[in-house]
Amino acid sequence: MSDVPPHKRPPELIRAYGDRKDDGRIQLSFTLPVATSGRAKEAARRFAETLGLKNILVATMEKAGTNFSFFVVYANADVQLDYSAIVVPEVTVPEWGFKEINHLVHEQIGRKVVVVGACTGSDAHTVGIDAILNMKGYAGDKGLEAYPWFDAYNLGAQVDNVALLARARELNADAVLVSQIMTQRDLHIENSQQLIELARKSGQRDLLFLLGGPRIDHKLARELGYDAGFGPGTKPSQVASYIVDVLIKRRPQAER
Ligand code: B12
Image 1 (cartoon, protein in one colour):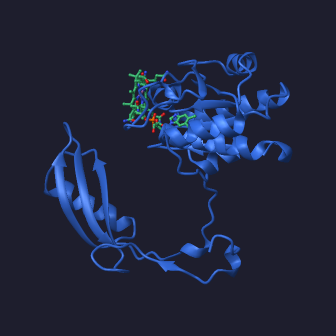
Image 2 (cartoon, rainbow, N blue to C red; image 1 turned 120 degrees about the horizontal axis):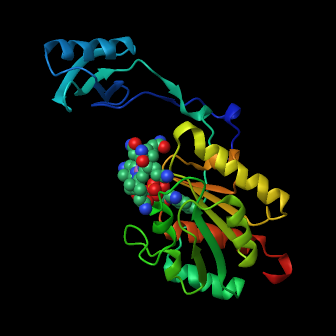
């Protein structure tokens, strides 16, 4: 189906699934800045009504601090989408594990893969980039430092874009890994774009550039000039697989 252009695909109409297919039933949660009461519950119902929802049931009302109430509402959304018309670029990653990845680097690249990563700009949230690069890894999946056929350098927090590119040059890196967690005032957009502009100017755009973070997806990363974007729940082996797959594909024909 994905090879068929969107305008040639048969329509695939979808509605929200609650208890039965196509019933349009949804669950919604939100907080209102009012103390828990009968009036507050009615405010929640009207809030949902104003969103265009029908058959509204305020299932939960809980105190969420002084003068705040948390609600869970069940309702019907009279919304139908044509799924066939939705096209989103998605990063394709082979499902390789630790052993397979190391074996492929050894056999097909014949040298260690060098990656350098950082949490850049004013962002000090290093847990994400640590999860990908540090030995301990994430969710039982070893980080890139643990791969014998990878040399992984984690530059840590608040790294300046110029310094990151300079280090990538010094290390003769294959890939640059950027983590952006803070999205206030679109800081992540500005900062991520600046790195790519600098890389173009310094003649380093032929390196692989990966962008990651809780509000990052492949589509956004591509728009910002990166090769790939990785969001919440990314495992280090997915990142390693992506890098190795691209490096193998990029090798000249004669070497394959
Ligand atoms: C821990 C934390 C902190 C710690 C950070 C410690 C550290 N060393 O990292 C401290 C206390 C320092 C902190 C400070 C601040 N924080 Co804070 N913090 C968090 C918190 C609770 C958890 C983040 C985290 O560790 N997630 C766990 C990791 C594993 O998940 P992840 O980052 O998504 O990473 C995964 C993927 O996204 C992906 N990934 C991430 N990066 C990369 C990179 C690549 C290349 C790839 C491939 C993949 C990848 O892989 C990872 C594993 O799957 C979040 C709220 C939350 N629950 O998310 C707020 C949060 C991020 N913080 C927030 C804020 C506002 C701040 C402060 C501004 C607060 C303040 N007023 O001082 C400061 C800012 C400091 C700064 N200059 O950056 C906001 C951000 C809001 C926004 N939209 O921008 C959040 C969302 C809290 C909130 N709801 O308001 N924070």
